Image (tube, rainbow, N blue to C red; front, side, top):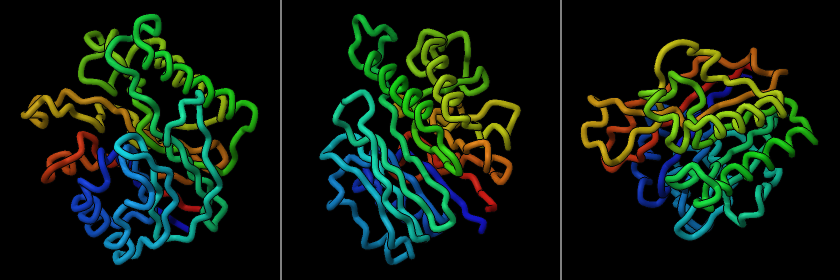
Length: 262
């Protein structure tokens, strides 16, 4: 059964409901994973989503912060969440489709501005969160699973607009990239996006501070789609919907897509 999945840090699902609807109408992914929903679950505006066929939702929410949701046209079972690093944040939820594929939706902490856990608590929380992810996947190695979300790390040199300039900038520091790789290795994960688009600069986030974001193109690839080794060969058609960054009242992230034939 082929299905298409998209992941998108929406930066408030209520504020940006119109562009979620636009994406669902124009692109029609079978599953849409959202991060940074910034809403309690009961306040997520499901009426229009359901009218478009997305009648299934699994979510974890908080007022004003964090929050993750999986919208689906396909039946999906809630299989729980984990509070990594004991932060008490709504940053993870997992669902299982009828074909047996488990989808993990993550919103990894951004980590603040200073890449030093001694002076920046948020950076330490980010590293601890990734360490907990690593340990969980090492202890319970996932099978037939997809992991998506805003992981807030651009791991490769061509995942950022200037590798050397960003080596000391949170999201591209060597210690973050090392933690990122450790999580991938622990779960046997494969980078679906880069398997399909192996070469060249590729971004999914452009700062709100740059009004000429498209021309300047100082982006980073912070949003990811991974698959376990048993299904990675079934993934294809990866793409970043860059145009969505220019929609009215946009998120600073663009959706990332992948299709799986299982």
